[in-house]
Image 1 (cartoon, helix red, strand yellow):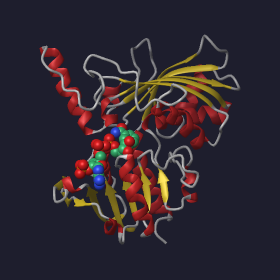
Image 2 (cartoon, rainbow, N blue to C red):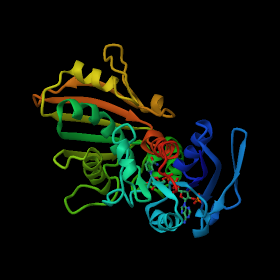
Image 3 (cartoon, rainbow, N blue to C red):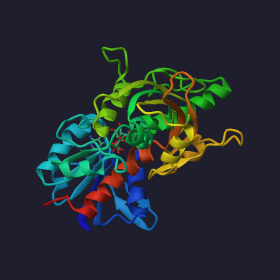
Image 4 (cartoon, rainbow, N blue to C red):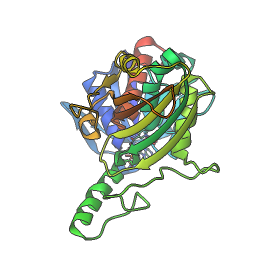
Length: 338
Ligand SMILES: NC(=O)c1ccc[n+]([C@@H]2O[C@H](COP(=O)([O-])OP(=O)(O)OC[C@H]3O[C@@H](n4cnc5c(N)ncnc54)[C@H](OP(=O)(O)O)[C@@H]3O)[C@@H](O)[C@H]2O)c1
């Protein structure tokens, strides 16, 4: 049991789920403190029977805080994390800002839990598309060594924050009615459309989101030889990211072997019966903490390829669940404030 846990960015798309989850999972802290920007200061938040007042985040907010879960934009994380670490707080950060810092472990608790013990005050939680892909890669990598992955993502609008979900709703109404469609968050119409760009362009013509999938995967699995070729696409789905993944291994795996390995891995649920039209889809996976996989088949273009379809709630395992799991390990195994 720790004394105080703070959620920074508690009013955001991910932050609200973190707060719900901390209450539902009875997080072992005597006190939970909610922080956000000055815009939210003083706003009440109620979860079940528990009421909180959101406080404006300042450097002094971290005095006496053992663990902070940060769920803010990158530039906010860049500013507040040093304030917290200076005061002895261990920060579990959802933003991309610290993920590739060599002093910061990048952790998926089912995949590399031991990396937590190496922290120097900051632990990063990976990008949502990376997390669900690495979850399915891990059991296949352990059994047959993954050489190469070709992945196309179908990413829900909730991955772009609360304002994006409003934009999908209003734009869809506008598109159906033939009236104006708001366009504040996305650079193109999101209703009845697909946008093949998430993040900024990189010199190699991939996007920042795609390069996160390449670099974070290698860091989490501790293997720089793994080749990843991603294409990230924003789709007009409210919540839950989907991915078409082709995994090429060194040793051949049959589809049955891959299915067994995936079904036996913690946090993965296999739904795979094409004849019965059973496979994971974002609407049924939204609100769940697991990573769902189906359409598992031996590839017909390379002899050691396994193709599959993977869906996960980006706000939960892709963000909130993963960070809360890390914080639970810190609180129960020790490793928070000395
Ligand atoms: N959405 C996803 O699927 C997902 C998945 C993985 C990782 N992430 C990462 O998680 C982080 C949060 O994402 P989100 O989708 O939840 O974003 P969001 O809905 O836009 O929420 C942002 C949160 O940050 C707070 N904030 C903004 N400026 C602040 C400041 N100056 N001081 C204190 N708090 C401030 C906001 O507070 P106010 O309400 O007061 O403005 C809000 O609580 C991002 O780094 C994102 O990349 C998101």
